[in-house]
Length: 351
Image 1 (tube, rainbow, N blue to C red):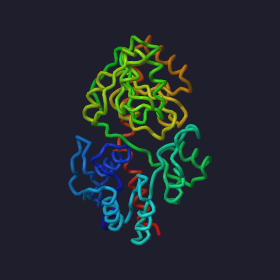
Image 2: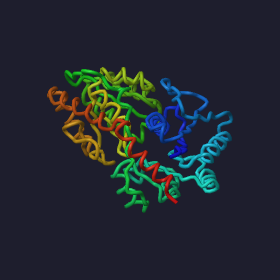
Image 3: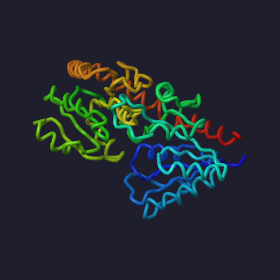
C-alpha cells in the first residue's frame, strides 16, 4: 500500500502551540505509512529543532506574506491529506484543496469563557468551513462549541500529546511548596491578575513567570516593581530545554486562565512532576483528576485555599507530583499519535 502524502500546515522550527504539535506529529507518525511535508519559518526560535530524516521541509522566504501562499500551494497540491491548524489564508488553501482533490481537516483548540473575551471577528466561522472534517482536541470543546456556535464535529476527539522525554525529571521529590510558576503568553487573557493576587497573599513563596511580558498598561517587570511584589520573578521566554531545566526547582504551576482548550503546559509541567492548579471553565477535569494529579477549582478564593493547604501539607503535594508524572506519561505523543494516524488514513480513503 503506498504511503499517504500528508501536509502538516505548521512551521515546525518556530515556537507556537500549533507549530509544536505539527512538529510532534512529524516526529511520531510512522514514516512507513506517511510521506510527510512540513514548513520552516525563516527565523528559528525552537533551539532544539532537528530535521527528521524522511520528512520534506518547505522553507519560507521573505517576504513571508507572499511566500506563505507558495508554501501552502506546494504542500496542499502534492498531499492526499492536509492538516491546517493555523487560521491563515484559509480561502486560498481550501480553493487549492478543491482543485487538487486534497482532503483537509483542522482542530478547534480553545473555548472562550466569556463573550466579553477579545474574540476575533468571525473566529468560529473559520472552523465551519472545515466541516465535516472538523475535530475538537477535547470532548468538552466539542460539546460546548456545538452548543454555543452550532459547529459540527467528527465523533473522534484528537487529543494533543506531550514529548515526555523532554521534560521528565528522574526521581524528583517535592519537599514542600516553595516555588510556583505560571507559563504563557497573552497574559491579560490568561487572567494573570489572579497569579499576582496569589503572590501578594503568600509572600513567603516564590512566584515565577515564564513567557510573555506585555500587559495593557506596561510590562510584567513594571507591574512587579509598582506593586512591591518582591517574591515574583519574570524569566522571559524559555525554549523546551531551558524550561525543562528550570522546572527542576518548581513545585506547583498555578494557571489562572479561564479561556483555553487543552493547555500543553499542563502536560509539560506534569512530566516534570509539577502538578497544575487551574480553573474548571474549559473542562480541565477531563484530564486532571483533581486531588490525584492536579487541582481544579472554580474561584480565586478556592485557589488561594488550595495553595495554603499544600503549603501546610507537603506530603499531599508530593502525592500530587507523583500523580502528575503519570498524567504526563498517559498523554505522551507515542500513546496519542495512533488516533491521529487512524483518522488521517480514514480521510485519505474517504470519497
